[in-house]
Length: 357
Image 1 (cartoon, rainbow, N blue to C red):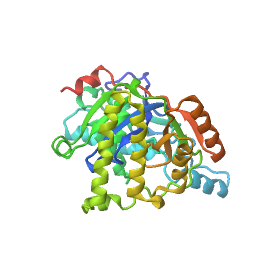
Image 2: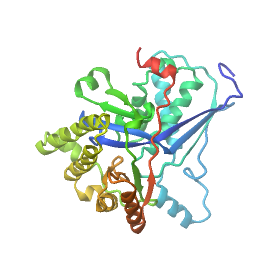
Image 3: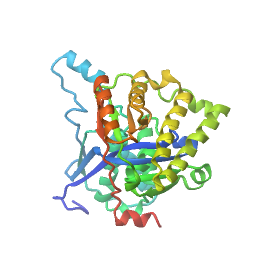
Image 4: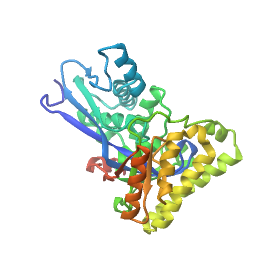
């Protein structure tokens, strides 16, 4: 087969991300801070093969059922869509991008498979994790990593998800492409001029100990996007001013992290969530999501969503005794509490070179 070692298996992981501070999405030209975690990840494997094969996952793409009850139960818990559609969409976007930019791709076929342990509907970027890992496989399989800038890759991941009607913005994809702790500025001028924001990696050790709260079987995610986007487009004064304030929280958070002012950081986390709640409303956020935040606040911990809902990131400024109280409250409420394990950037030397091209 042309251009590749037929015995080589390419494997990449993309890690779940936590949206730490900032506005809900870069579509509001704001600022945000996010970081990757090693607790959960998606894995994609690619090996050369005679035919081009996208392998269904035995659980997430299950098509054989023992009974009608199992089928309906599976749809109720997992939904209609698995990861195969994500793999096909990112390949289409990647292929078209290379074609449009005169990037030559060899003609060797491959077999693509995936796995993931990122909890569903948890606001930890499970779908984009699969897409990001697959894109990394394609970059290495076709040996084009040096031809597609790091700044461009989140746009390709986003384009693949938009192909499937997934409502999303760039920030999650930036966090997973870059890895580690990243400050992002999506100001309008840069977005319109360059097609991407300004992405600044930060020292991961600046983060204090953080915890994740989530429900193993989420059932009430609310209608998170509500009408806020349209109100923002319409120039609604409250939404516009609130979005500006939430963006400024990311900017203040960057300074608080750099100065290790963790009491300030806790206040910013709480304010971040409070603004989101005012903008979106309780009905849109969902009772389960609100309960996770309240469980943390009940013991004095700072808390906010990791994304659009589904999980909460919590900080216990008073240390071990407060963590123990939080564990007890989560247990009573039926939530999972686990220490977050921030994961450093995995950009290699070739990736870093493309950032300076």
